[in-house]
Amino acid sequence: MLINTLLPLALLLASQPWTQPQACALEPRQASTAEPGNITYPWAQPGDDNPSSPATMGYFINHLCINVRNATKSIDWYNRAFGLRLIFTAHISEHFSISYLGHAHGGRNGTGYQTSLELNREKNNAAGLIELLHLDFPEWDLPSGSKVPNTFSHIGMVVPNVTDTQIRLEAMGANIIKGAGEPFTGEGPFAAASGFTSLRDQISPEEKETILATLGPLNKPLLIVADPDGTIIEVQNQEGSQVV
Ligand SMILES: *[C@@H]1O[C@H](CO)[C@@H](O)[C@H](O)[C@H]1NC(C)=O
Ligand SMILES: *[C@@H]1O[C@H](CO)[C@@H](O)[C@H](O)[C@H]1NC(C)=O
Ligand SMILES: *[C@@H]1O[C@H](CO)[C@@H](O)[C@H](O)[C@H]1NC(C)=O
Ligand SMILES: *[C@@H]1O[C@H](CO)[C@@H](O)[C@H](O)[C@H]1NC(C)=O
Image (cartoon, rainbow, N blue to C red; front, side, top):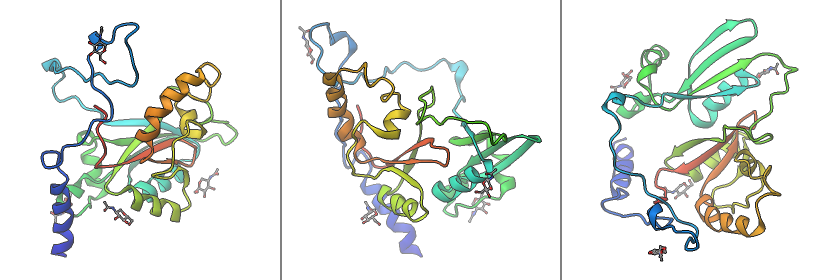
């Protein structure tokens, strides 16, 4: 038991940035040096160091919200696939429900366990929650973002070992769009959810090549999976390469 507890810690320490600096994937450059006629891609502009207004102290992103076709199915899927637990479902009316899912942040004390009451109490202290809106009208043809691109592209999930996660998801019959280590082609539902498919005719072959030359290697290690409604989930290793 002790070994089981200490081993991940040892691996975690061994992978800290101060012992193993990670290479940047893209050349960092300030926008001011990117003059017309002298721009080569890819490049990345690092963020600035300006502190935010003190008035926003304590602000954080609590949840994102997706529309689902079948709340029961999605709640079960997110639980089995990624360990998100149901915090509550508010049955607002006969055909409308709101559910919140989240990881048990009590996991940080090593047990991973919190009662539903504790999850509810901590809801507004927790980050990374998913809210599911369910309008229960089966004849409603709710299009998924991977069919009709819209402002929602994908959910990003981080896991300790993406290979292990893929094995689990395959075993539960999840819809794997791209396995970890498989090439990113710029086609298929992942690309569609980001709008590339609908802009296929407007992006020149040269620009597409430029995009693939960078996104190919960056996206290759990622596992891409679709939820029951086709919403895209991007899964990456905790230990990933830095973009800038
Ligand atoms: C062109 O871009 C490079 C960065 O790739 C920069 O170092 C250089 O100063 C730029 N040259 C001119 C003439 O703008
Ligand atoms: C919703 O999903 C559940 C669980 O997968 C299933 O039993 C139920 O039949 C589904 N409801 C509809 C209306 O499809
Ligand atoms: C871990 O945290 C959870 C949530 O606060 C709590 O229910 C549980 O008792 C804690 N376990 C231990 C061993 O401290
Ligand atoms: C990730 O999991 C796979 C499959 O269980 C294993 O072969 C691999 O060694 C693991 N990688 C790391 C870095 O732990």
